[in-house]
Length: 532
Image (cartoon, rainbow, N blue to C red; front, side):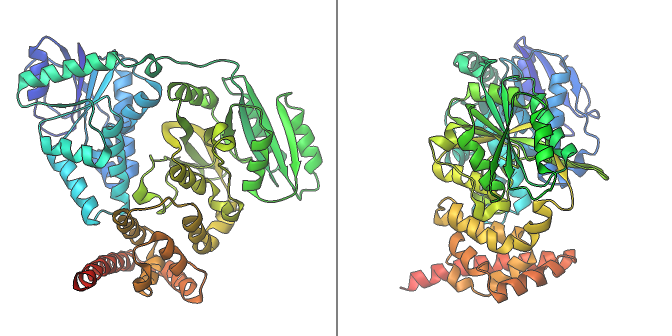
């Protein structure tokens, strides 16, 4: 077998790859450029780790970037590996595992995650004690997702496997070993079992006549911006698309001319008209009128990459229960240029109401998610309607997943809805979002969620947390209604918090006080119940 064994440690323990080489397998080591070559004849592949330490310090974005570099290094090697083994640390396996899980990018290669005792135990302990920060929790989500969807987990400690089974529900395809012989046998068994997986995991399953409906709400975008969006939809490598441009009661005097010009671009363009009701109502109107089995949402100031629809269809074809995909998007500014990547995360209960880390405008759905399961965009939380959709999917048990590919470009400009409304209306809308759309939480999950909120909502939320803490009782819904019910005190504290955020020291102190208060309240609750 051809095997790629990954480690970014300065001085890796080569016991495992040495055993594989001794058993007659061709072993390639993917390591840092500074790593000294071992003495058992393995070939070396070098990861571009420029700025790797800095990347790790940047939390989730840095971990994600390291994972992307690792995956790119495997692809660039040109090798058809039978097995790739990646350590769980820093989410290194996330992009490779997710690409294999959704698209089988590496073909029939089996991807195994090597479990390490300190890393897994530290994450589990931090989560249980509610001491983990929101940014570190996001890295933990990358690692958990890698362990959940890898072809196999391999390690020495039964305690680690027990932790994974408890937290992630992963019991199949786990391989424990205590010596070199058992390790080699476990790897060989994992590869055999991966090759025996059903064809749905390896077949492309794309049909050229599958219709994708691209939905483009229009309100006041200039002709050049709207045209660029529509043309990006028409330029998809998958030809079977219809483009529904929804005129949401545009106030522009030249709207008729704009819509006529856009409609003339291609016979696949349809223009729909409705009274003004906001972005959510425009999308809902087009959902009812769409003819496709799949819906791809495109805001009028964004643009799709040509391969988006085809890539999405490949993933949907492999996973029949998958209802939605959320790709990366590249932010850009007409004057400032590149604004960085937005990288969605797999759904995580602890992060659910921290902020929308699950997908932005520009996601792809099965039409059945709306017509058979009743999904709709909520106009009452218009600026956060994408966020509400993911919470609704989680509440209804509909499967949605991120895709680690950049498939559309997001235009950033000063008069967008998020720029002009989100900051000022965050308090009241977030409360409604939580109360109406958030899934139910167990008491344990609620405590983790509230600790994450205190860490991530800013000093204003931290200050507000201190006042009515006795009324909260660790219910996120009551928390939202109490703190963000639109009262004078909440708004005053929020404004004070915004000012305090200008001082990193004050911001850090405020969050620390809020987390301590939540933990103290939990202790007081336990003590009170014990005395009753």
